[in-house]
Structures are given as C-alpha cells and as structure tokens.
Amino acid sequence: MITSTSNVTPGQCLAMRLERQAPICVGLDPVVDRLPDSIDGADEVAAIERFSRGVIDAVVGTAPCVKVQAACFERYGSPGVAAMERVINAAVESDLIVILDAKRGDIGISASHYAAGAAATGAHWITLNGYLGEDGVIPFLDAGLGVFVLVRTSNPSGDEIQSPCCGDGTVAGLVGSMVGRLGESRRGANGLSSVGAVVGATKPEAAAELRKTMPDAPFLLPGYGAQGGGADGVRAALDQRGGGVLVTASRSIIHAFVDRPGDWRRCVKDAAATFAEEIGGLVAGQDH
Amino acid sequence: MITSTSNVTPGQCLAMRLERQAPICVGLDPVVDRLPDSIDGADEVAAIERFSRGVIDAVVGTAPCVKVQAACFERYGSPGVAAMERVINAAVESDLIVILDAKRGDIGISASHYAAGAAATGAHWITLNGYLGEDGVIPFLDAGLGVFVLVRTSNPSGDEIQSPCCGDGTVAGLVGSMVGRLGESRRGANGLSSVGAVVGATKPEAAAELRKTMPDAPFLLPGYGAQGGGADGVRAALDQRGGGVLVTASRSIIHAFVDRPGDWRRCVKDAAATFAEEIGGLVAGQDH
Image (cartoon, rainbow over all chains, first blue to last red):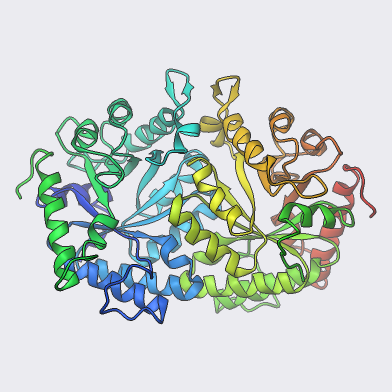
C-alpha cells in the first residue's frame, strides 16, 4: 500500500512507480447504463461500486494509477460519496496510485476543508481548478496531496476561456506559469514535482508550449484515443527526461467489454494492457 | 417552500423574492472551533448541522437566501455530506432560496452528474467555475438550477489569473462575456437571468466594467465588510434597474455571537437584520 511519509512527496512516489510501469491511468467513471450483464443495476450505488471494484481488480498490475471521477458518485448524494470512499480505499489497498478527479477550486479555509476531506479518503492526488490562483492550490499541497491543475482542457468550449492571447502567451499559459512556479519548491529527489497540470492530449502545440514553463510538472493527459488525441499529443508533453506524463483513458478501458463475449474483467484487463503497451512505447526510461 | 416549475426560472424566482426582501445572503460556513457554548462539539458533524439549523431558524424572515459552503461538510466525508443534505432541506422547507456553494467545474456527462446531485439536494442555485467554458455550465442550467459563475473573486491571488489584459478586457471579462451570452436566452419575465456571476465587492471598478457585458445577470457579491468591500462595491455592481445584486456575508453574521452575552441565535438574527438594513439602503425598488 502506498503511504505518504514526510520524506516521499507525491511527485517522487509517482516517478518511482513510473520507473516500473507504463504511464497510464484508468479513469473510473462508472455509469449505471453501462454495466456488464453480470452486475445487477437495480441498486444503482451498489452497482457502480461493484463495477468499480471489478475494474480495480482487473487493472492492478497493468496500470499504476486510477482516477476516480467524483461526479459519478456525488450524483447519488451521501450514499454515493460513501461508495466512493470505499472504492478509493480498495484502490489504495491494491497498491494503486489514486487521483481523485474532483476539480475542486476554492480558497482559504474552504480549500483546507476540501483538502482535509480528500486526504482522508486516502487518495494521493486531486485535480483542481486554478482560476482562483495559488490560494486555491497551496492548501491541498499543505495537506500532503499532489495536485493536477486544469491548464488546457480537451473539451471544445475550453478554447473560449483558455486559448485567447494574454501577455506573451495564452490564458492557459498564465495558469501553467503558476503551476510551474508552485512546483519549483516541490520537486522530489528524482525531479518530478507534486504540482502537475491537466493538458489535453488533443493539443500538441499547446502542450509543447506549456511544457517550457512547467519543466518538472507531471502532465495528466486526457483525450487520447476516443477524443482524437494521438501519439504526437503525448510526445509533445514529454519532459526533458522523456517522461513526466500520465495518459488517462476511461471509457475505452472500462467499457471494453461492450459487445464482446466472455468475462468482462478480462476485456478490461486486455484493453488496459494494450493501452499500456501503446503508451509505454512513447516514453523513455522505463523497464516494462 | 420554493418549488421550481417550468414557468418560473431561478432568476425570476430570485427577482420576485428581492421585491420583498433586502438582497442579502447568509453564508453557512460552519466550523467546529467556532460554535456557541450551548452546542456540544464532541460529534463534529452533528455539531455543525445543529449550528447550521440554528442559523437558518435565526435568519428566516430577515434574509431571503442562504449559501451553503459544501467544503465545510465535505471535509467530514459522506457523513458530512448527509448532514449537508439535511441542512439544505431544512433551509428549503423554511422557504429560503438556497445556493449550494460548491464551485464545481466539469464537462459533459460529469457536469450532468454534478448537476443531478445538486438538484437532488433541493438547492436552487449552485456556484460554478467557468474555466472549462460553457460545457461546464449548460448541464446545470438544463437540470433546472440557477448558476453563479466565478468571474472576479475577492481573494488576493485571484488577480494573477483573472486580471491580466486579454483582448479588449481582462481574463475575468472573457468569463463574464460567456455568462452574459448564456444569460440572454435565460431571462425570467422580470428580466433577471438564471446565469449569474460571482464578483467580489472589493473590486468596484471591475464590477462596473463587468456589468456592461452582463446586464441581466444576478451578481453574487462576497467580500463586503470583513474583506474590505463597501457600499461603492455594491453600487458599482447594480444593474440598470438599480438591483440585480445579492450581497453575501458569512462570518460577520454566523459568528456574531462571539464575545457577546445572551442567546446566540438572537445575536445572529440581529446581525442579519443590521446587514439587511445596510444593504437594502443601497438598492432600488424594494418594499422593505
């Protein structure tokens, strides 16, 4: 089980893991209308929990990391949140690095509250929205969490706010500069910082530009595959050591059983293995 | 109890209420180290719930609206979220307009999940982060909620991201333009839209500039009083009808009992009444 100590930062912990495994992350975005036939969907919360636990069991050993989409559980209110806590615990107990994909963004004591709640789940990292500036980021770092700040997202309407020119770069560049600055004093012994960035794999040019101001930040890359991101999107995001990325995929992995015969967990495991092989071939320095 | 129908939008509902009451909002940000002596803090979740219910009882009839800070409850995980659901329900049953201050920001189906969860609590409005563009806003409107999008926040480090020049205005102006555009087709019969903006009362110049692109948006104004915002910050945010604002205060109201003798609920009620009188004098068109 991964435990934080004062000597091992989230960034260092992630880097150590990526020396052994391909830099992929499986997104747990369970929805009740896409469950294997063998899972009864009558009790929706129980069903998404059972499915999530099955995915975790299937990808352990193949993926180093899972990303838990808070929204899928919060839609069911407090019983859903309780299920999410159990799912995160199961992932941590299975020795997976866990990113809580909560995209929180508040300041001061409210940010400290969110950070305390997230840390208490056992998650190692959390996704954050940086629009409020560093006031919305530092409390999470102080709670011992690693953070991935939304910098350049892969959705169409993100362009309206993120891509306009601003100073020497773009609005996303402003957020990226903040991430880079906060990361300078939060690098692990192996160079990877605990202040990461979410950058869509669909934006290679933006990723390459953003990497300049965030040399040591882990980049969490959504949008590969289904949303049109490809190998060039991953390569553009690599750091000077040829790593520093974590490519995340959700539906293409967790719904790999749809329209396929046989055990659903096997389909998920196979999809994760294919994804790991594909992404592993794009990065340097791994022994996998 | 306020109920939504297909004919009454959240904006219209808010406007109708503000014809009768001063445009103030009491922020429910309960913390266990600031409770009245009469509330036992041993069970922290039970204590903040009891305190929140007491504040609701105290401000009903004086304030039209409460804002529930999700972080204060989420820090306690699923039991905290369950308490928050009960607190929101109590506020709705007390005929208060309820803003869920959750600052969510996700897209597509994840945004729909968050929206479903928020609507199920009974809250009428939710605060959102607009960095992901309209993809992160529309699903909440589709769920029948009114939204307050973070445009210009009152915290010091918000300046780094929100105030740089961008096109004809600032980054905050980009988000404001999106709010204004989304609001055009979502105005109630009385002109107030269901797409609002969070604008710090500490930024009068910014508020006046932003109002131009959001003529019909309700402005939720934090930062009045304790954080240095004053009457000029409120006046700058008024719409052409001399209204369209909702001034929110948390600690100055809910902690009004600190160092004061007597019943704590009476102190809270008196503080809310003073605040209502002060703010009511700054806006036009109310019968209070």
